[in-house]
Length: 146
Image (cartoon, rainbow, N blue to C red):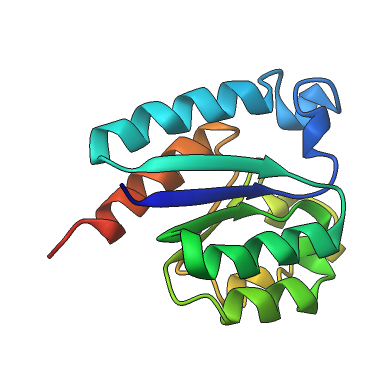
């Protein structure tokens, strides 16, 4: 069975507790459940991971080269700062989808640019945690044999 890696960057471990007016009250466990439901429809598995450490996210992306068919990533604040994550994603050959819970284009100007978007095959922003399930559905379409 194919596996899709769902990577979450800094502070997403606080999802549901941190700034619920921006990020909502759902937790990463809720996100995982919703994505697993969609992935089951399409016949692939998911592995959801979160780290506040940039190097750990890079290591998971490197590992995905051997173990994952696709990557869904919410790099959090690393979206706007990490060329290293972009470089790691550029070495991954499968589809990459970028997710942001909030609409980064309606927030502070420093959030308007994402290095990860330069590699992403699609970007979902501003749909709350539902964006993860939307990205999982899109990944199912991308991985479906043609």
